[in-house]
Amino acid sequence: MLNRFIAALAAIVTLGAALAASAQEKVSIAALRFVSSAPIFIALEKGYFKEQGLEVELKFFDAAQPIAVAVAAGDAELGITGLTGGFFNLAGKGAIRIIAAQSREEPGYDFVAYIASRKAFDAGFTDPGKFPGKSIAITQTGSTFHYMLGLLAEKRGFKLTDVTLKPLQSIANVTAALKGEQVDGALLPANNAYTAEKDGFGKIIGWVHQETPWQLGALFAGNRVIEQRRVMVEKFVAAYLKACADYGEAFLQRDSSGKRVFGDKAEALIPIIQKYVEPKPSADQVKASASYIDPQGRLLVRNIYEQVAWYQAQGMVARDADAAKMLDLSFVKDHLDPPKR
Image 1 (cartoon, rainbow, N blue to C red):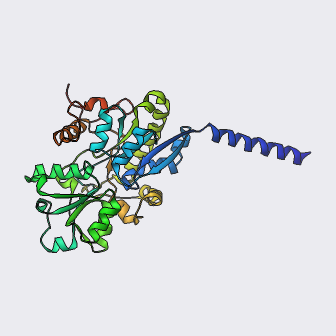
Image 2: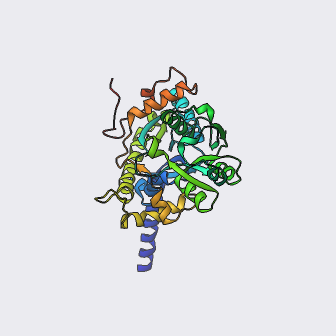
Image 3: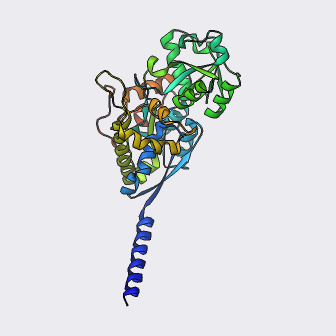
């Protein structure tokens, strides 16, 4: 009798677990395997999405612009990556909207490096001001790397047209071109840049945050998803912000002298990041390439407007595209630096 009772109880527990699992609302997010995607990995591994009743599927891509396309097409409900000309084109047509911040180029936090091939460095390509006349690998025309070079050109006083850009579609292809000395240089995320320098085929000549800080990445969603599944998006953002706070406590701390410090909280999160990032970084590489992500998910709003204006000036985004309509600032409180109306 007792055995039957135990068996019945076990069956009830199993059924309850199955029903709870089936009650999880499914949602997918498109992302890159970069350290800058860390809050998504943290929220997934620490169960923050499950706490919100969400079953999250990660869909990985090799460049930022395909992520925007995937979200606009409905192949993923949300996306997290850098903002590109392709993104702003789709957002300008009402397909996607920015809802929270991801990474930004903030002084003191290495994220994207200017890197020279070993041969070009030995020939004098040793400074970010020496880009004119060089062939430079980027992922795509209109990518964040394209924009970063545009900002650098404006600051350093050279013409972007004096640089031969080589769009190669993915970070892997950019790295291969640099390694094969098919280009003079490239822009690469920190983890990839450190690998290139360690392996001897590249030399870091500067960091974007030292030259032109800006709001590089964002969390965004399809407009239809926001309109039809708003509660789900709110739950997703709540879990995401919880992970952003964890990330900030672990990777954004400094001592009294301003030096970055990493304690037990960082050590606990590093294996989570290593699980998803490619190429797999060492613990030291994770620490060194942990870019700045606002712990509250707040955007530098004015900078979004500036990005749209730059892409419009390059003829990559329609002149009538309205940056205000590309944003839904209602999911996160107290965004930073809003433009004056």
